[in-house]
Image (tube, rainbow, N blue to C red; front, side, top):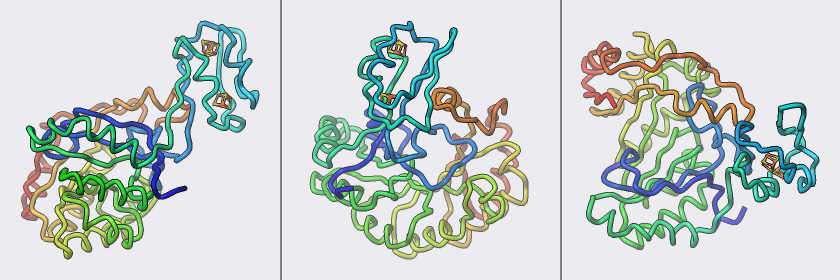
Length: 301
Ligand code: SF4
Ligand code: SF4
C-alpha cells in the first residue's frame, strides 16, 4: 500500500477517552493480536468486511442481484454471507437501503484524513485535546502513521498513539519523534498468560516499553482488568513489576465491558468471553493495592 494512505475503519470525533482533552480518534484496521475481550473485532483484518444485521433485512433481494461473488445465502427466514467468497467490494451494502448490510473499512489518503481532523482544530485548542491514532494496531502501518503524525505536528496539534506495542522496535523509532503521548497497553504480566489471552507473548511489548521509557517518550499505561483472565495475584504482580522496572509510577486500569459483543455476531465471529459479567470498581481494590506495593498509582476507569 502507498505510504500516503491508511486502511481505517472509523474516524471518531469528540472523543474524550483516548488521551487529554477532546480529540479525534482515527481507528486503523488490522491487528496482530487477538485479545479475547477485544471490543473492536472489525479491526482484526486490514481488508474491508461486511457486517450483517439480519433483523433489519426486508428481503428485497437487491444484494443477491448485485453481488459478483454469489456470497449471499438466503433461506427460509435466514440471511447470511459466505465469508470465503466475499471480496469486501461493498456493492451489496451500497444497494441495501434497509441498512442490514454495512461495509466496514476503507482506504483513505493522508490528505483526506487530515481534512477531517482539521475540522475540529478549535475544539482541540479550547480543550487541550488533539488527535489519537488507534485501532486495531495503528503501528502496523508505520509509513502512513508517520505521515499523519508529521502532518498533525506541522499543524501544531497534540498527537497520541494507542498501541499494544507488539511491533518491531524500528517502527517506534520512526513514529516517536512525532508522538507526544503513547497510550500503551499492558494486558498480562507473564509471557505464557499473555500468549493465552492475546495469541502472542509479551517479550517484544516489554522490550518496546523499555525503549520508549529510555528515549524519553510520553507514556500512559492502560491495563485492561478482565475478571478470571488477568486479575489473579501472580499476573497482577507480574504486571506491576514490569511497570516498576521501567520507572513507571502511574497507570489506568480499564474495567472490562461487553460493548463489542454484538459486532462479533454481525461478522459471524465467536466471542470468547460470552456471558462474562462486567466488574465493578470495588472488584479492583486488590489490584490497586498490589500496584501500590510496587510504587504504581492506579486510576480505575
Ligand atoms: S439488500 Fe439489504 S434488505 Fe435487501 S435482501 Fe439484501 S440485506 Fe436484505
Ligand atoms: S461485499 Fe461484495 S463480494 Fe461481499 S457479499 Fe457484498 S457484494 Fe458480495
